[in-house]
Image (cartoon, rainbow, N blue to C red):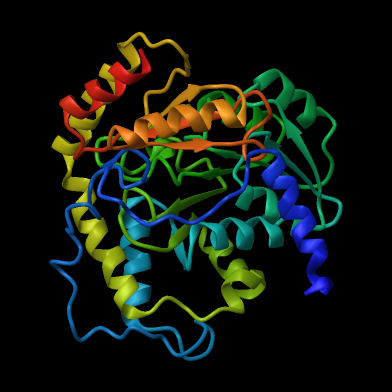
Length: 363
């Protein structure tokens, strides 16, 4: 056991920071923390449609035994829905970001990414041979400074909706800068899929920018209610990823049961207009309320209440948990020190009564 002391040392550092993580089981509380924005999981909508004959294993990678007609036709369906020339499925959003960003930029190229970009984006950058620089969150002036000194093929990476702040990237202005400096824009649409736009197609499509963006990543573990992800781009990009993306090549592919769930979800969430409208009304209710803590501006289901200090934010979260509201604290080092927060997620299945109860406890 003494040979594992180095593990205990690092874990003790987390305990000292009041940031030690543990797993917990669902306790029947009001869900104000999951990414099931439209309630597809909560309401069991996909379970009603799954065919029992579908295989729950694929038998290999897509390049070997793991490809089939259902998977390719589903990719074609998603390409059509998202108005993209081509689509390529990945096993998760993490795999998609790592698989795309690690292999496309080459040595001598430059990656410029929003400082608040998701860990999967950062891990993809770490695995790339390109040089990389961050720019201040949603700061167009700082982005332009980085673009002016970039070399090689240049890639700008951002999220459309940021997972820890709930705000949106200024994509129109960012794309204009990318075109000015001949850079390629990559947008992670994980928290916009299903929620943003008339049919939930994401922010890029909602703004009419989809023909000008190099690549989009849509993930299915949030509002879409299942698992997996897709990279959207040109047919040339799809061929390139099939040949060079290690996260695609060297993994067993999604089974038919997962692909069918994705396909069923894509038939379902575009029609959930009333759910998106109700969700928007809850967001407006939360944003207009006055509470005793700092509240970030957000037009998305992700609502953020800043409570500096790991211990302080954990105490408030515990009070909400005791009241039957499942709200989780986000601690340093996941967010910067002093920016610890409650990450409150609103859903189409939440009631006005539940949101008002939450607000009352925060007032």
